Image 1 (cartoon, rainbow, N blue to C red):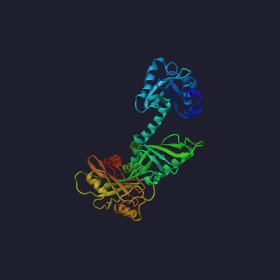
Image 2: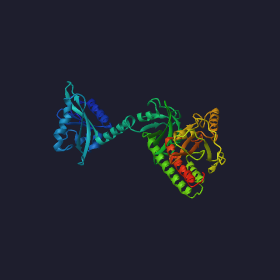
Image 3: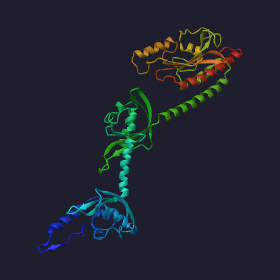
Length: 468
């Protein structure tokens, strides 16, 4: 018995050989297909059964062809009427009908299948039977899940997904990644990563090259990059995972590129860094307090606080005292005398200065004078004079610092007022060079905490009759 029931009709001219040849060809075609196929005539009798159907259910064509429906062998008796009704209903319905139900295997197991059935027209155009293609649902569902996952990743995912080819250029980009790059999905395709990122390109390309050569790393990597946007460069932290892609169709793995998945964790990392910085600075304040408690000279105690505050915070620092020791709130202009300063040419501890009591010649509008007038912290910066700028810009920064009586390599300044018992004692100034960022609001809070401790030490010295 072949994959279909053959006709045994003859006449006086002998067997109809061409008809048998057509049946053989049809049987060969059906057996060569990957889908499970069966057919029923108008009475529900199985007329065709191919090898894929035999593989799924275990029933051979000889066992299946000629049976009345699936009742008693391929479905449970309780389900037979419903299943037969669904299949034969395709003769009265247009197009294909899709159903899911359980079939029985020859060894008694149950297989959930998805069927697609349609009417087979006879010579007169009326339905003469039904053909049915079916497959195991789990295989179809696996395929549909793979397609759905792919579409979701590239349309709805809340993290960036980029397929990078072997030349390290984006080949496919999802909507989230395109927004992270600040461009449209098609605008980033095929472009070098250096055109999309202003910073962090070397680290990213190194990671992609490693994945192509060695495979995926065991854990995600956090990378800081700078993205070019219409508002300028924005520094972001992307937690990135990588997958090496290879063709599943080749006998030997053929690299197709790298799957790069990333999530923006900038805010979380900044919060984490700020918390770590706060812990470090709090520890420095405690260490400074213990060290200052051992100092007999109030000026030395103030210098100890200054030295501990500098670690990881600024490059230079100086203390300017109000001439005469202190000035109550609301009094007129004050003169400032340099009391202590860190060396500007080499690292070292703060050194006492201004023993002669001569005032520092600060011009009007100097940040230190503004700090005294406002009784609050003041930040200042040389502006465009930054590291890596043109030759004239560092020179302008140098002139800016020298004009303010600060070390010539200073680019950013933060002044905090020294106050105790309702009086202004002076100003502490922290200075950063071009290799550091400008002072932020969090830095001002720390400087004010240091100023309180320095002012307390100096005021204690005056109360004890000393002069800091």
